[in-house]
Length: 281
Image 1: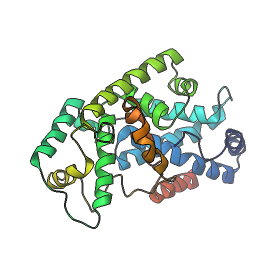
Image 2 (image 1 turned 90 degrees about the vertical axis):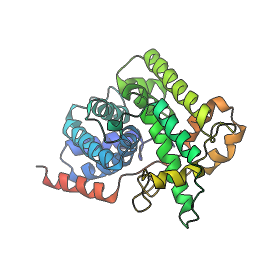
Image 3 (image 1 turned 30 degrees about the vertical axis):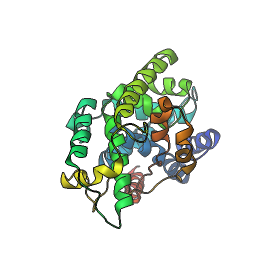
């Protein structure tokens, strides 16, 4: 998964110029080109699809309203990331953030699930439920970071922006970006090294073992999966999973996040954005 938006920078900038000049088709195409990338960032940051959709709409409205101020001092891509980052750092807390989960609390929840010793239910959707547990748990761990460190980690290690691009998106010095990223990586790595069997073969937790406890506690709903059933904007990268065993354990926590799918904006959100554009003067 990369941070690359669906079109090259020059194509996006051409669309932006045409949109500013009043070309409605160019504006539609620009929104379509940006929406999946912005949604993917928002979902990683806010951890709930509905909150991410609301934030994506708000961010893209800001982008469209500010197109005339784009001066090409950076790429359009970096400019959009900066608007998105500013919005996500200051927006109201999402329903997941409101739970105020800490690494210690999450570790206790995982330990309680293992102690319950509930066998994985024999269901036809068991693989999907296991994927939901994995995505939900890794997202919960990400949410344990404060917003500054979480956003830095997402930009650098999930969306794979360069240090210069990430620093520009957050409007901080590259040295500050690297320091913040190092802290975020260390905190996630320490947690996952202690707990996550995907990262450390000797760690106690396995996603399959948590399916029963999660169903019992209603932390996942088979009829309404938050993550595993979403449309994926790009194909999975199974080669990353296959290479996981060959990677030093110190780097596995990053790989676990990178091998996850790039989530895309829903058709409902796309329609909402189209209606907004239709209603704009």
